[in-house]
Length: 444
Ligand code: SAH
Ligand code: SF4
Ligand code: F3S
Image (tube, rainbow, N blue to C red):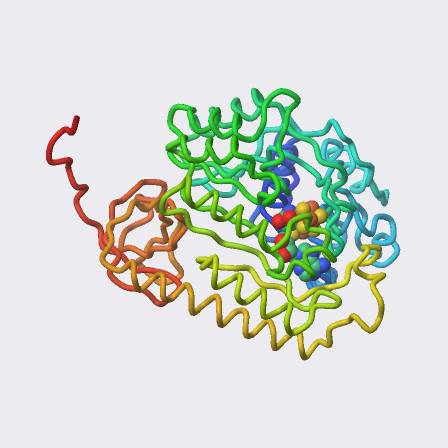
């Protein structure tokens, strides 16, 4: 009997790419491939890539070099995702051992393309397909506790630093009924947390329903206990969406709300379409509606023209919002984006950007530590997500997205525990399970 061909996928970049890898593996499994955990000896190796910063692309180039040394001579190497879309056939010229280049809208043809490559062809498939949501694919999920649910592809914003509109094309939304059907399947598969994905996920609109309707619909699916979403855009938090978050008990009290800068001048040059005040107002409206809401964010330092005063405004906004955590980045110029055409003298020297990054990171850490120290002693609900790096501990998350390490064994993964927060490193907590408190009496 012929043994079935094996495939290994390595994923870079954001959750959207993780979700796409799950779809690709599902598609290939249906076509008879067996997923393996290591590239060594695999018949097909796919790198699902990210193009967001130069560093992300350099990592992939380094990895391709390593693979060339280690792979079997007849292994098919494919590059998929955002870097594949950005570079297209150029990648085939630059890396002779790569035979497939497939952009984010090309995965339907994956089995045929891989088959062609196994017969010696070299191909690039980088057309956008505005109808494509891979509705009929059955994703092979890596995570057994929370399910990534892509609800929107592409992006219609044009932030001047960003490559995503180029790599993922125009925005489009799945239909509400299709999303709900997938969420029901997730419950049938034993999971109770979902994360809705889109580049500006709260601008989701399927022609008759808005993101508020979507939250209410998925939040009401029997068996779902936690609903999260990423990443929203501040301008798309309408009162309807905020009301749906507040009124849907399964929607968690955490929002990742990319700010990028706290300076209105810089925000304007980034074409973020809100001001510092607009951002802070969005935060205020959400906090008024949702008690206990925690916020995380993305910030870029060293954007062209960012002055010391602009950066100080970013620091002060970070303090004012009191973010629980932040992903912080040095601006990385991306070929073809408007930010690369800003005047030369606006370039922020790397040493200045590095120093700003250090100060920003220290500020974020200080705020997190202060918040976390105040929480010691509290009792919280934790969903156990994965084994912790440290030995016999499990890593869980609170509804408001804090990380808690608790003693336990792998059989408990996917279950909920009531724990008391007993210690903190400043960034994460340790906790001790406590018996769930029973209500003393029925009220009302
Ligand atoms: N769609 C999401 C962001 C996706 S990219 C949103 O609009 O919020 C994730 C983060 O990468 C961005 O929020 C931004 O902080 C950062 N980023 C994007 N382009 C960048 C660039 N050219 N240089 C540095 N950081 C960048
Ligand atoms: Fe990029 Fe802006 Fe779109 Fe986010 S909203 S993906 S930062 S263009
Ligand atoms: Fe990277 Fe593409 Fe996501 S550029 S951040 S993998 S949308």
